[in-house]
Image (cartoon, rainbow, N blue to C red; front, side):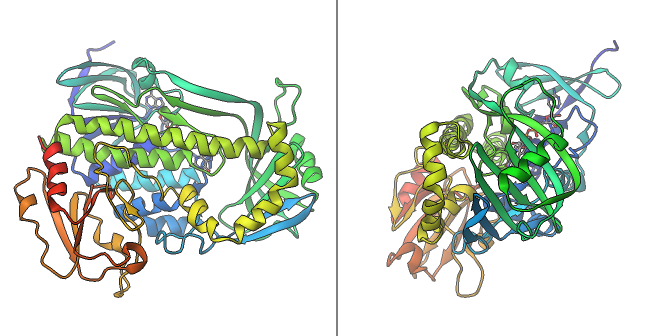
Length: 510
Ligand SMILES: Cc1cc2nc3c(=O)[nH]c(=O)nc-3n(C[C@H](O)[C@H](O)[C@H](O)COP(=O)(O)OP(=O)(O)OC[C@H]3O[C@@H](n4cnc5c(N)ncnc54)[C@H](O)[C@@H]3O)c2cc1C
């Protein structure tokens, strides 16, 4: 083998799935240099994750990609629940997130298209994705990390970098070399996924059709175009070595859902095991893991890919500030604590829903089949759906209340740690319209002049925004108060004392 070729960069990203591509896009936004290596020759052609949640769309909006994503995908506007062939509940999802996000829905967009969108962003900004380049190992020292990979010709390459981020999927070689545990469980049942074109007098609208059946469920997610659905369900138990085809499953689907359906075209069929796992830590010194490399989830709620994208949104600004020398490197540790806690919470919520949905547990199976349709009807028609279900699934309620970057404080229902709450001013612009700059922001709400002199002495730059209009629905009668926002628009402090904002910034500053 020839001698290795040396390269130098600030960050090496291993893996160009949705997580690695998102990290690349975020690092571009923060002017951080990187090398992105991917062992495959191009982005995936498989539809895999088909749900893009509202918080991801907000992040895409900051990148200027949300409109394109909406154009390439399809908004899911409803949900119907069936039991014993009869529709029990119909829920209008179109405006479920009204008042919570500009994006009041979940977008159906195939993962292949999401990856393509992000890859186009990366290359349009003059960056190369090094396809057919396989990460092999790293060596880390106090002042940097050396990453080795095999290029297209099979030659070993060496990159000297400040940081390495493993976005290399569930089997993550980076996580393995870091010797991090990956604890959790693997569901004993086998699941199937089929993307089909179908005709049915019942499954014929742009809504999620959920069939509760004795042994689990059959879900039909609407995809782009008419009659195009993703079917997800559980394979019959018994012969675990059998290799299933869609033709084995199709009659069982028809029989169990009872609603008439004709399958006209199969576009993708796969069987898979459902894992729920989380790494013991998301970083060690100068190496990080993100996305499926750090945590994997059951398919309930369509959270996996979205969570990976949010990992990178959390990590990118911390890397950028540390590299610029504005903050202490201890800031990076908050990536681990914040995102690890989030993944743990997600495993507890999505896995719980999944246990109930898949009929694994006999007690929950009884509840599911007998009470769930009624319970769902009540929930669907109550404000609870809006207050709890949408924020949970859309990931707009992700908060970091226990973070070192959060100073316990609140005004009305707005608490430090929360993502900035969404509202619309009387000029028709929503608050996020003002928050797209990836830096610390001091928001002042009141009629006096914002007293930001104190913060100007800080090594960490903040941009100041003053608003005289204060939405009562969000902040009650409060006036003359500050919000310190992190670059990812989570609230570090909310209250009247500007000294608290300075305290946080001084604590972080290098
Ligand atoms: C059937 C199915 C349905 C799903 N549905 C949903 C859904 O509706 N919503 C949702 O949010 N999630 C869903 N998911 C999960 C989602 O697909 C994953 O969470 C997502 O792909 C994770 O992205 P990632 O970039 O972290 O990892 P991956 O997509 O696994 O990407 C990792 C990349 O790293 C590369 N790589 C690995 N090793 C190396 C190496 N040594 N060197 C270089 N490159 C390497 C791989 O080739 C790959 O391109 C679904 C998954 C499946 C299988």
